[in-house]
Image (cartoon, rainbow, N blue to C red):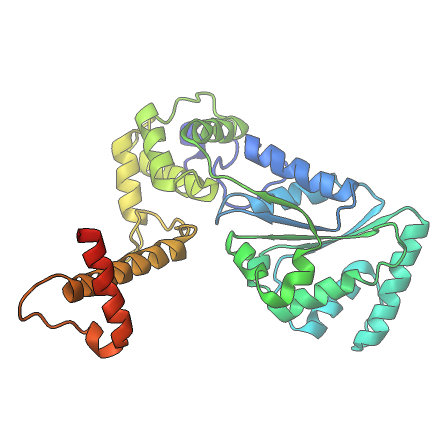
Length: 338
């Protein structure tokens, strides 16, 4: 709608991943390099995590488009499957027969891996949204890797998902799987400078003749409300350009960004935009420390009530401690004081 007004040849902030127009921040370049290394080095299990909307799926598409012909790749984007559905999907992707029988599938899959090993080929399974995969299915995936008996590490498995994937993998049943993870990598959110670079890149690849459509204050606010999440940057900037077109304004300023954020704000959300709130690490340690501190102060207070020479003061310690212990406390206090 606004392409002609701003001189674009295509939508600059389209939400659909485009492997031909991938902005590579430092963290994305490193992430893609890690994925490629996991394939080349035959590292077996690899785990890639990142907050919602950081471009994990886009990275996976860039990876699959760059793979050579000697790599058989299966990309599973919806892992909430039953066991049989999972095996049926694998069979279809790898061109294997599926007779609704797990044992027969494992025989065919083992033969497939052996043939790939003989041909110097590799087999790659990528599970996107792996943080929602059932524990039982994760265990099936681990056991599936046991079928690679060639000794050449033909079969590699990449688990990609949100940060809670790490918590998901901490299940005690998945200890054997965790011990096989050779590489872990986490995608970081954009800094303010990287957010600016991303917006400029999107404008340039959309054919913009002028790259200063957004003011510096507007870009700062875009980063603040999106917290550096690429998907939310796209949403805010796209809405801002639509608003600018409706108001016949060639430049997007901070006030227009605020207006767009207000319109995009979901009722009941604590944040202006629905960004992920990461749980603070080791929060349990803080509460344990607080509990021990309060408990220690309470015990100390009871001891002082028992040993200090207050008149008509009742001490509950007399009801719970043996008389010889109470006598020891009194003697200890008298020795310190005397």
